[in-house]
Length: 353
Image (tube, rainbow, N blue to C red; front, side):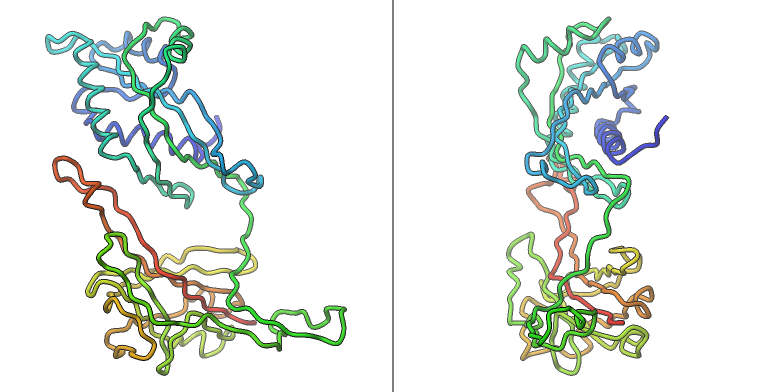
C-alpha cells in the first residue's frame, strides 16, 4: 500500500473535522470514506452503529492551475457526496436518524465554510466548503452504480482547493533586495559574479505609513531600526560580527498593545527556503510608522539573525504576524470562528559571502 500523501491526508482530515463537529462517537456514528454501496454493506455488518459516508466522486483541476510546472503544487476542486445510513436505534426509525445526521452536517459546514487544516508536509490549506445542487440525472447516475444500496437523501459539497504536492519540489530562488544598473567595457561577463556589482543601486525606502486598525483584518507594518535609521533591507557579511551579533531592532506598527509574532525564514543555495522554528514575541507600538519619529528602544524588539545563516551566504526574511478572528465567522452559539493570520511586509537580510 502506498504511503499517505497530502491529498489523502486533507480528505481524511476533512471527514474527521465533520465527525468532531457532529460528535460522531457519542452519537454512535461511524465515519466512512468510499462509495455508498460499500457503506450500505458496512451498515448491515454492525447494526449498533449509524454510518456517515463521504464519497469523493469528482476531481477537477483549479482553473488557474492549468499551466503549473510538474515540480510545483497544483490544486483541485473536489465534489463530495455525504450520505447518512441510519439504524433503528432508540425506538426511532432509520429515516429519522438520517434526517438528524443530515441536519447536523448542514449546520457544521454552514458554520465553517472556510476550514483551515494542516499543516501537511509544511502545506497548510484553507478549504472553501460550498453546498452544491446536483441534477437528478447526476444523482441517478451515482446511485444506479451502487450495488446493494438504495437511493438516500444526501448532501453534495464542493471542496476547494485541495493541494497535490509533488514528491520532489524545486529549490526556489532568493529574493531581490534592490535594483541597480551598471555598464562595462566588455561583454564577456567576467565581472558578473556574486558580490562584484559596482553600479548604482536603490534599496526600498521606508516611508511614513498608517495602519487602519478599524479594519478587522488589518496587517502590521514593520521595519529594521539601527542608529536612528529605518530600513527594509540589511546587508551583512557571513561570519562577521554584524552577522553573529546582529544589532538591529524591529519596529512593528498596528493597534497599540496587540501581540505580534516575528517569524524568520532562511535561504541557502543548497536547501532553498526553510522556516526557522524559533519565533520572537513582540507588541505593536501604534498605528503610525514615521521614519522621522522613531520610538525609544524600549518600544522596539531586539532580534538575532538565525544561527543557521550567520556563517553561510544566503538570505533571511523576517515577517510580523497577527492572529485574529472575524466576528462574522462566529458560530450561532457564540463559539469562535477559524483563526486567521495577517502578515506584514517582508524585511530582508542579505548575507554576503
